[in-house]
Image 1 (cartoon, rainbow, N blue to C red):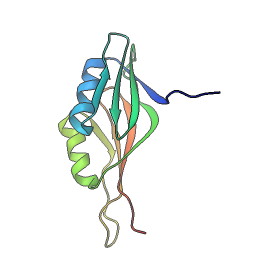
Image 2: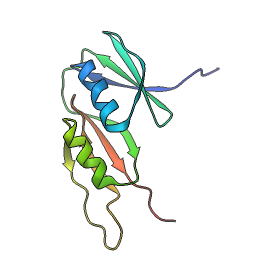
Image 3: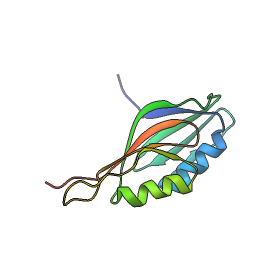
Amino acid sequence: MKVERVKYVIWAADSKRAVRFYRQVFGAEVNKESEVISEVSVGGATIGIHAGGEGKRTWTGLSFQVPDVIAGAREVVVAGGQLTREPQPEGNEPPHLAMCIDTEGNEFMLTRKRGG
């Protein structure tokens, strides 16, 4: 089987708001926008945003590696998202994890590359 592309699809009650969130927080490039499904690219990955979601909290499995989890978590909140686990101190290293929710109820992680 020849795979042409892989994309991860999430649901959105308001797909325009979701596209705006991913553009604002992650600098997503919009590849396609329609009433049914939009597509954005973040870090070389494609995320499909499918309209018709109910806005319920859903674990997505998405993880975004960023250089600074604390700054990233602030950006999530400024863009209308939420934190379910704020970045926590980790001894002598900066926090490496924040658990987040986008404007549509999709849960994701922010992570920082750990040493080594």
